[in-house]
View 1 (cartoon, rainbow, N blue to C red):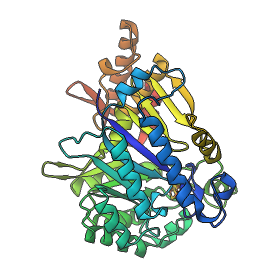
View 2 (view 1 turned 180 degrees about the vertical axis):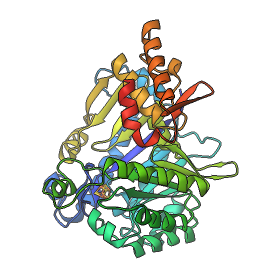
View 3 (view 1 turned 30 degrees about the vertical axis):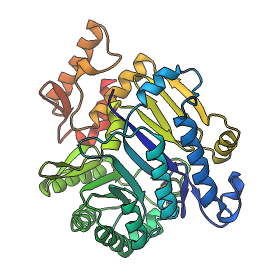
View 4 (view 1 turned 135 degrees about the vertical axis):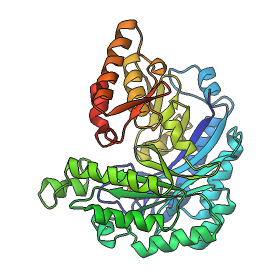
Length: 411
Ligand code: SF4
């Protein structure tokens, strides 16, 4: 069993972005009071205490209380961790001292075993929510990777997306992170904005590349139901970019980043190739490769190989109530069927550059099923969307922009 990853969810943001449907609460003066964890700014103290209680509850010798799971099973999967990820929401709306305390609590309570590159500790951070001094503190707290939600270097695009920061603030905080000694920086960007041209997207890529980040995540803008952006689209106030337009931008992204020394190892993820150092996200790869991971906090998900998922409901008040009563905050445990495991194996495998090996896919049993599946793979190969390298099937440059369609034809 590979080592597990630990994820701590911080469900607060300075404000809600126009496209986001993640579980997070805006932290205005009274925002957390309705969620049942205190009034005013109390959430800054109350929530970290809840999360630490959750950590203690899970890590406690007799306290792995997942309904329907033998304790020995979960204890074995979570006997070794090598990555810690603080995400959200926006972790950096919490004071850096509090984040440092959460990190040291996690490292004390869980069996972290450094890999050859040590323990990877990633912090998501948003420009506009932290200072250079905060970054110095986070560095000394042990954060090894900083991932900035930059999204764009255009103020007009940032305004459309409802981000709280400006391009200038993003540039300044990236510089401050370098000054604080961070040598593994990730930048998140969003492409496929309404009317976005290749030149506009290229300007964003250029601005990002000028900062020489070790990692870049380029996400296609999606219109999630219920978000302000999707309401605008439904009302005709904006026109989403066409599928062809989005495909062209992805093709351009791959060309541009590959020629600049980055390897695309997942549909949205690109890591700098620099000698022997591997800048791919070790933690995120656990999500795509069937490794165990434990997510703590409301709305966080966990996976216990080979087939068990569990999560806490996206409900801070319910989470607080259960933790304070000493009950498990896990609200759902799900055992995946063989078919679900197969579908997930294809979906997660094909989004990675490594692709899939049919004999490794879970749930693909029987001669006939294997033959049918291989036939589908060969057809997609003939059409130029897939190719084979050392027995693994992966997307071609023509295949990446139509990944979802390729997957649909395989499952
Ligand atoms: S900062 Fe991130 S998590 Fe928070 S609202 Fe914006 S996109 Fe969502």
